[in-house]
Image 1 (spheres, each protein chain N blue to C red):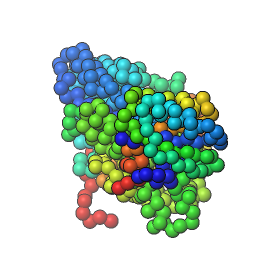
Image 2 (tube, chains in turn cyan, green):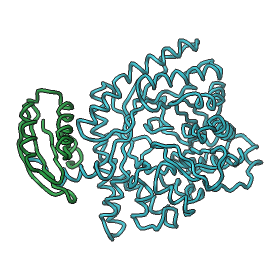
Image 3 (cartoon, each protein chain N blue to C red):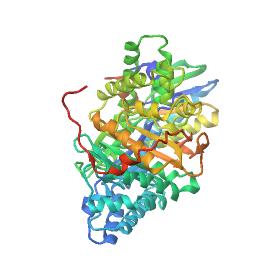
Image 4 (cartoon, each protein chain N blue to C red):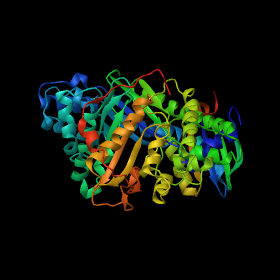
Length: 454
Length: 89
C-alpha cells in the first residue's frame, strides 16, 4: 500500500480494539492566580468564569480528536493552582465555597474530575494550608468531582510529620463522611512526596506554581498493549524483552504526543507534557499485574515482582522519552490495586500484600494507590503507612503517594466495589502494631544527605 | 491529507462497492485498496484522499461507522497521522 505498511495499520487497529490502547486523559492545567480576591464570592465567581472560559471546548475537542484518529480518549479533566495558594484569608468555610465552585465548573464543562484542591506543606504550614486541609473531608464529601492532594514532603525539605498526622486524620474523617458509599471520598484524596507540577492524572493533578497561564497535559496508557507484546515475545531473554517494551512504549507515547499536539492546536492552549504512564483499568487484559505475570511470575506479588516492575518501569521511560518533545508528570507504571484486575486477583488470593506493594513503589511510578483497608485501622497506623511510603520517595528522590481507602464497616477479606474506572478491591490486611509514639512526636524529619550513598 | 479506512468482518460481499459509493458521495478519492487477515477476520484496508472532502472529516467517520453497523461489519476510519506518528521515527 502506498506509503503505508499493511502490518503497521493492522497493528495499530489491533492495539486499539483488542488490547485496550487509549489516551487516558487530556488535562487542561489552569492558573487561578489572577482570580485572587479578598472576597470569597468574587474569588469564586472569577474561578468559575476562568475555568469555563479556558476549558470551554475541552469535551468537544476531545471527542473530535477521538473520531479523527479513531483512538478512545477516556477522560477529559481540568487541574488548577493549589487552592490554598489563592485562598488569601479564607476560613475553612470559604474554602468549602471554593470547592463547590470547582464542582459546579466541572459539571458545567461536562468533565469527570477537577484537581487542585490542595496544599503544599513539605516544609511548613501557612494558616491557609491548615484551613484548607481542615476543610478537605467536608469539601470532598459534599462535592462529586473535586480531587485533592497534599504534598507533605520533598527530598530538599524533608518530611513534615505534623502534616502527615493531619492527613491521617483527614483520611479517617473523609472515610467516615462518605461511609454510605464504602468511603469512596478517599479515592479523591492523595498524599504526596515530591509531587510533580504537571501531572495530568487524578486524584493528584494540579497546575503547579511554575507553570504558565494554562497548558495541555496528556496521559497515555496501554498496559494491555505491553502485556500482549511481552506475551508474543515468547521465551526471549530479558535484554530482548526490555527492547520490546521500549519499542511498544515508543509507539504508545507517539500517539499521546500526536493527541496532545492536536488538542493544543484546536484549543489554542500551549502543550505542556506527555505523561508516559502505564495506567491500568479494571478491564480484563488492561493490567500492569498481567504484564509482570507475562514476564514470568506465577502471580504478581511473588518474589521477583519488584525486579520485574523495575525493569518494566525503566523500559517504559526509555521508550517513551524519545517519542515526545516534553515528558513529565508521573511517568511510569501505576499500581492502583482496585483499578487493576490482576492486582485485585493477587490481593484476593493473598500473594500480594501491603508490604510487597510498598516495596514495589520504590521502583515504579507512584505509590500505595487505591488500597482498601478496614476503617477500624487506627489513625496512627494510617499515619505510619503514609510516613513509610513518603520516606521512600524522599530518600530515593522520586514521587511517591498514598491513596488509602479505610472502608467503613468492612473487614479484611470483604470486597468493596466502587464501579467504573475506580474498580473494586478486597480489604487488605494491615499490620496494626502501634507507631503512636513516633507519630505523636511531630516536627520534621530532616532532608536526606545526597552523598555517601549506600 | 489522507485517511485509512479498514473494514473487518466475516463476509465482504458487495462491501467494496458500498464503501466506494459512500466515499464518492462526499468527494473522497480512493487511492489504494489491499486486503489482509486480522486474527480470523477478513480485513480490507483502503487508503483515501480527503483533501476535497465536502463534509467535516468527523461526520464522514460517523457515516462510515454507521455503514458498518448496517452491514454487520466493522468499519474504522482514521486520519493518516496516527499511523505516521506510531510507525515512523
